[in-house]
Image 1 (cartoon, rainbow, N blue to C red):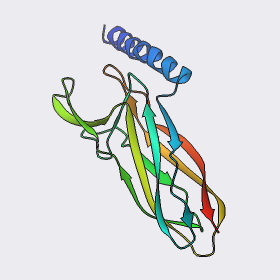
Image 2 (image 1 turned 90 degrees about the vertical axis):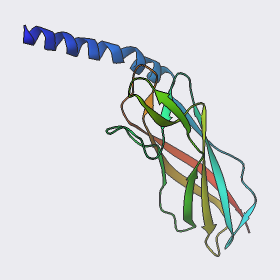
Image 3 (image 1 turned 135 degrees about the horizontal axis):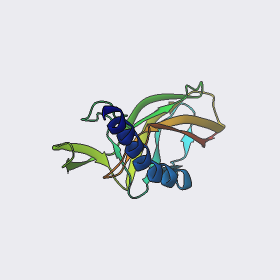
Image 4 (image 1 turned 180 degrees about the vertical axis):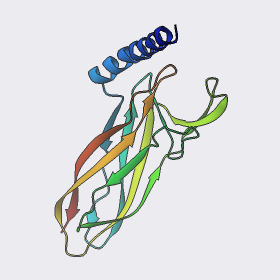
Length: 160
């Protein structure tokens, strides 16, 4: 009896995630885009914004999730000789009460803005490639997808 109940539970869990996984394969939960930045010059500090669009019905957890085992939302930039990253800031998450966990959770829904504050190294100009990784875990009100890493590439223009 215990074995039958266990097999049934595993079957239910697997099949409850399949529709969510199929939806995520057809249309990933997030998309990233570098916003237009100010004109930058070598030796100058500046910032760029990365706009993250979160598709319905998904939401992402903040940088400090209130639930153990959930992946925090995080952006990392690959080290560059041309750019010294000083700080990465995230827009404020929305506080939502979860009936499932019976607690308030800090979530991103719809959109999130990541701001990178940096300094362009002296003597640099032209196109500087940026490469990074956006780490997140997308959940709906009924299911969570496995944690994901989405690569990010963009080009930063530096005036001579």
